[in-house]
Structure formats: C-alpha cells, structure tokens
Length: 615
Image (cartoon, rainbow, N blue to C red):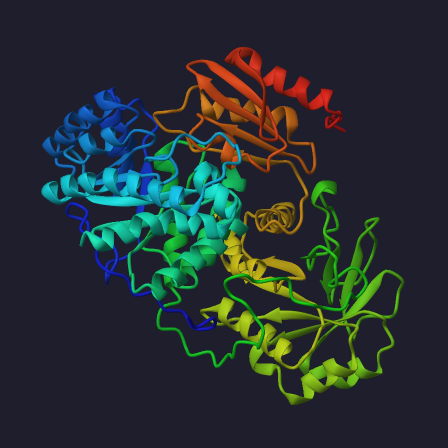
C-alpha cells in the first residue's frame, strides 16, 4: 500500500440486487431502519425516505421468524411503488432467521460472534485445540446450509463482526483484540471460499476509532495474504449524534477511505436514518476528490508499522511533543480574543495582528518580524526565514513548512534547533499524503521535532467543516504522527468557538485527548427498546459537563455491554420500556422503568463519586 498516493483497493464485485458493490463500482451509501420490522407500513415509508435521501441499500433488523417473514411484504411493497433499493436483513443469535430472510431480501448480515456461538457472557472459557476445532466444525455444519439457500436465491451476505459482540470462544483464545476480531471474520470467510460462495461483503466495526481502524487495516492485510479480495463495509458503531457523531464517524471512516479501503459505508448516527445519508455522501465525495492527484514522492520511514503504529518519538518543546497530549492551536487574525473555557486552545496564532490583550492560560504566536520577545509569546517563521530563526533566542519557535520545502538546508537547521515546532502545511489535493511524507522524511532523518498539522478550509457550513477536518486528521492521529492540530477556516458563518471545539472533538474522537464527556450511543433499529433520541438528549443534558467520563446509551443487548466495555457507565435497553444500568461491564440494576432510568443513572454516577455540579 502507498501511504502517500491515493488509490482504491482492488476488490471483487458482489451482486446485491440491481446495485453491485466492489470492483469498479462507486463507494455505496447505506442506512438502517429503526422501525419495527413487523410494521410493514412504517418500515416501507422509512425505507423510501432513506432511498430518497440517496441511500443505496436499506437494512432492517429481523429478531425472529415473524420479522423475517414480513420482509417479503416490505420488499413487495417497495417494488410495487417503484423502489428497487436492495434490502438487507440484520440477524443476531438465530441462524434459522437468516435462512428465512435469505429468501426475501437481497443481502443478509450475520454476526460471527453470535451466529452459532452462545451469547457473550464475559466469562473466560478454556478450550483445548480439539474442542476449538469441534466448535469450528459446528459453525461449518450450520453455515454451509445457509450459503446454499443464498446461492439458490441469489442472495449476498455480509459477515459483520462487531467489537462489542465477539464470542467468549474467540475471547478465550485471542482476547478483546483486533487479531480476535479478524479471526472471527476469517473463520467464516474461509468457509465461503471453500464453498465457492463469492457474493460476500465484510464489516468489522467498533465504537473505538483506534480499534476500528487498526482492525480493518489488519483484516485487509490478512485477506491479501490469503488471496481474498472481498469488498469492505465501513462504519464506526455507536458514534452518537450531533457533531460528536459526525466527527467520530468522519475520523474513523475517513482514515480508511483515505487509504483506499472501503466499498460501502454507513455513518451510524443516533438520529433519523435518512439523516445519515447526506453525511456519508459528503464524506465519500470529499475523499474521492483525491483520485488521480499529482504524484507525491514520499518514502516510508524505516521502522514505521502501518498495521500497529505507535506514537512517533519527539522531544518535548514546552508542552508540545514528548509525552504531552496533542496541542490545539487556533487563529485570531481578526483580533478577537474570546474563547470557550472548556475548549480553550493552548496557543493562539495572531500572525501580523498586534497583541492587545491576553487570555489567562493561553500562549500566543506572532510572526517573527512582529515578535518582540514578550513573555508568553513565541515567534513563527517560514522556510525562507531560516537566517532570522537561527539568530532568535526564543526557547520555542514555530516553523511553517510544506513537504516540498523540506530541503537539505531546512533539515540541517532542524538538527541544530530541537526547540523548533514544525507546522506542517499542504495545499495538495491529497493533503494527507503530503503531511505523511513530511513526517516520514523527518523520521528517516532521525529528527524528533514535534509536528503540528495545519489544516486550512473555506467552509460556510459547520457540518462540512467538521466532516472534512476530521477526515483529514484521522490517519495522521491514528498513525501516531500528531503532536498538535491547527484548524483554520476562512468561510463565513462558522465561529472561532466552533472551530476550537471541532479541534478538541477530533482529538477526542482519535482517543488522544479528552476534553468532554464521551457518549457511546447506538443509532437505533427495530430492536431498540426505548425512545433513543429523547433519552440521549436527557442524559446529555444531565452529564455533558462531566469531563473525562464515557457513558454508553444502547438500545438493546446485542452490542450494548460489549461496545460499552471501556465505558464508565451504561444505559441499556432490557425490555420494552425497561432499562438496565451498568458500571463498567457489571450490570448493577435491572429492568428499571424507562421514566425513572435517567435519574437512576445520575444517582449511580453520584454514588461512585464521579459527579460534579455544573459550573
């Protein structure tokens, strides 16, 4: 794989109704209904809204035989009204339901974690090699008849692995790891290959973007090694709603799309399903602008491990680099100083704007020819000002560089001046490629200067800005290359506060800096057991000021306890109108009436000493 030049991974084509995926087909967009699948009228209406918004596949849950049977009526109603969008049945726990659904839809999603293996209990089990082989044979014995039904009905399948629902069997041998997720998938894929069943799509998801990206990269490498070229479905599970859901999804999915991985995506938002489609469309269209871009002559640094990256070693310059969390730099070229205390940047770049006042706790960056050595301020240079830089006695200096200006003179200067923080710039159509190329050259030269990534936009819509910025930063953060982020937007209608909050949101989505409560919330489906959107709003209203906590809000138990494995507290649908509360993985209170559950959650947080009153 070329780290610096964009090209899509070559995949086999999969037939899904009249909308094939993979091969030379465009990246497909999809969503999932949150209606009861037995409610034909509501499901058809919502499927139409998804299709009208541009969704190319519509997924519906089928908890049991009745729901699977009703897929026939939903399919027929859509076709009768001229909607040819392929339908996908989502199956958990019951392979018999998959057998039925395969007769009525264009694709069936099964979950290796619960297709044959028992529901996850979080208990550590021990298997001998012989016992493990027997369990694999059980999978084969049950899976092959399903494949035969799919062959007879020209039905594709998706093997959909979720971090939150790995089986205890996989956990016993591999633990809660990317390797375990990949093996869970490969067990089923190898059977497909042996049975000559090729209409297969794969997804391998997590709510943790680090796990999600690392696992998909690993899966693509393992498939390549075994001669498999199946297309990939990308998504971040339980991404949430609002700006958090958009940033988290764009960062995780965008990091993979930017490397050419992915043939279909779903942006999982805790909102109306049709609201997911425009977000996904914007993300795909933005990444696809990189096609056929001018060549970037980057070279991968010795020792860099794309499949399991670690943070690049850098010297600490003040509070940037070393073991410090990535810094946030903001601009105030218009002379405005106001910041949100929750998302106050570490540094504010003023450029040529004279410094009139200071916000407490914030340092300022001035262009070198304006800087007078004032306390709490630092000079910024470009590559043509090296003579000024060498004469400057400041203990921290910022040097704005592009990859193409990183010449021998600049490299020599950097070796002599470890106090320089590099601000990496790019106007290339594939700015990720140039940013990566610059840092990889630094690594190859043995330079340990910290690197802050400058990302420049001219967006007028907040959503567009957030999607693009998160997509551009995803791989840089997850590759371990990021010592700081500097977002600059020259469009109208987007405030400094929004730009600052987006920078912090991107770092939190990449799991490198926490600045607010993290909500892990599912998008909802026909399995959801309470009003998800209103519940999320109520929980957020009561807890969003609690910096550093992770709170899971899950509609049912399919992925609930698993995806919340690293959450501090969990709110999970247990039965219709009933909720169970979790502390870490432990269920501490069951079957609470929905109308009491949010208050009980707050009481649980308070009882454990994790609650503070809003300021």
